[in-house]
Amino acid sequence: MTFNPNANVGGNRARRRGAGAAVAGGGIAGIGALAVILFQLFTGTDISGLVPSVPQPGGGAESEIEQCETGADANTRDDCRLAAGSGVLDEYWVGQVQGYRAPELIVVDGQTPTQCGTASNRTGPFYCPPEETVYVDPTFFALMRERFGASAGELAQLYVLAHEYGHHVQYITGIMEQHPSNGTGPDSNGVRMELQADCFAGAWVGSLPEQRDENGVPYFDPVTPQQIADALHAAGTVGDDHIQQQSGGVVNPESWTHGSSEQRQGWFQAGYQNGLSECDTFAVSGRDL
Image (cartoon, rainbow, N blue to C red; front, side):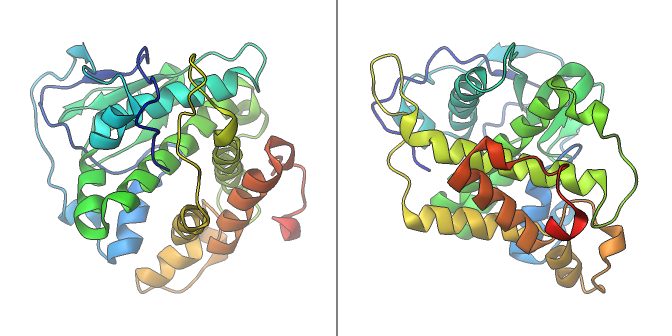
């Protein structure tokens, strides 16, 4: 999922916060714990052993993400890619949810306090409902790129971002309130919440050919079959069963919080092929998840 170099991606609302000055950043925690799991499953190791904590004093200063105006900028820098992606996601959801209000996107440098705990390169990307804010420390993506190449990094970033935006939509539309946590297991509300966020991400990816800037320039180059295959692979790697296997444990569906690899791939593909109308994971029986 590469940005069209000529697309205008300026005017996004993303901000940088933290006491550090890194332009690369970190993992996933909180609602939709995805990026850390991605790293663990790609490498077979715990990201906490690879990404040291970066203690920083304070962490409350904010600044604009500068020199992020074109798709070429977004293809070059992680922070700009995330900022640009947030703007495109907002445009998509404005057309899908009546009264949609955009979340804040904070690109974390080092660490920063939040109402959901400290955002840092150990906790990684997460959505904080009381703040209606997505936090991302992109160190994780730099490590992904080092090990798997730039395309893997780009795909992971946009997939993770779209997934977290899906949690924001669940929050502002009342889905989270209607379906509170009821424990773990293959039929739990937590699993259904994560699968729906995957479906929402797939629906957004499916809409990309229709999204253009104010000059009519497509935001993204055409999505290729290989990129869709990569997206499905990424969805599968964060299945609870795969993670349990990679960690050397026994597959235990009763402990699942995100769903199996097959489920995550299936719901992403359902959204990609058929749009948001296919994303009501709470309306189907457990055997149909």
